[in-house]
Length: 596
Image 1: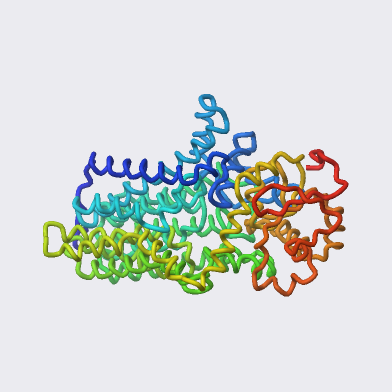
Image 2: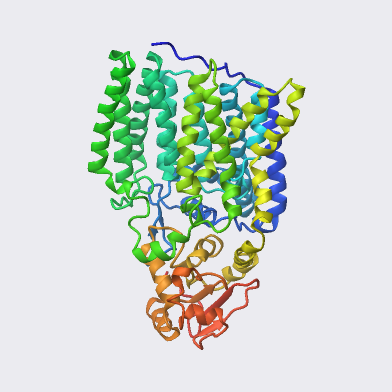
């Protein structure tokens, strides 16, 4: 078999580093200034960011590394989380290092800004590195700039975005960079460790990981002995790193009914995949021709599939299969990022803003792979990653968070190919516009027009309902149990000392169901439930729980009464500012910390 072509030798470039650092400082500063009124009070951009900072505080405060329970969520005893301490480690270390110098609050604010900025810089540098391997030095600075404009990917690097998605983006680009490196045992081992860490942090990146493994399989099928070494290294490291985490990072909560993170089902599948890659690495040494490799790959694939079918079938049903049917219908089906790109999205603008650069860039990658010269092997492998990810994005829009950054790179290559050719200036400018993800974000809002206004108005009102000042007022109330809809749970946990029933986490079946039962009950039934369960406060936004699936439950319910201004006598309004409706149950003790 012919040896695999070599990629351009990656050389350190001070100008590229300066460009990445400059863009990181410039954009992080601009984003921080824009959101400072919220950041200064640690009101972070997203529900998951609020829950992440609560998890980090709990860990710093003495909760064990393997204990991933959120004790202020759900029924008494807390709710199990599906997250990983791997994503907590760096921001927690930053807080611990800065606290003696700045105090706890300022240290947390600093970490909330510094951690996404550090990941953003790594992301830009990796985008430049991938472009270098695919095309050459001319593409590298262009890739850094386009990556900094790649919406929606860049939205995960905003100050305060400390959830694990930004880390997953960096890990996935590192994995793609490894795919394009010269194959070796060490390269495969590095890729295996990155893949294992990514799967342990969360399964959101599984579609892109499958795409990378498909491309790695194609390279093994058509490659030389070096590809056998890479496959062997990948399998050994994937299985070995997973085994290491099973020994030292085994969560206390180990549910066999879930496949949503580091669970029995997902780790069994990962170990089976590792064994499969080890087998391919050894088999290729005795099977130099493509037909024999194809036969060996088929046998190994069937064996892995049979193993997964026996140990990890729950993974095929998706991460939310263990949700109650009611929660699937009224809650999860309305979570935008869990829906398809073309199915269930609120507006045409959402489809364009999130999907355009991903789909166009993936198409352009295929064209470049077909036209590829000496670097065709890498171009084809890269195109395989993008095409499979694009199909996954059509099925689930959250895939675009990683894909958009990668999909900007084919535009980078096309732009670099026009350099030194003045007659191609118009084409170059067009490619800059088409390759910048923010272009589609800019046109998405006017594109929606009048049809989107009611939806956008409702979103704006929810934003007014979660301003920092309101939670600061609530935090000053005596500690208690707050009955609130799912949308408010993470903010109440992250910004107040209170306990809540519900938040947007699928393992919290009991707590989320309790919140729906409470708000959809008649006011007198809700009062009895509140007394029985020890509710101290009720919090509500004017525009939540209005989904179509809930309309048949709303007439005569507590949520309908409160949003209509009909406050039952057993609730005492507490002004908190903004648009949030907040009440204390009359007759409750001012402090019920003994119960919590």
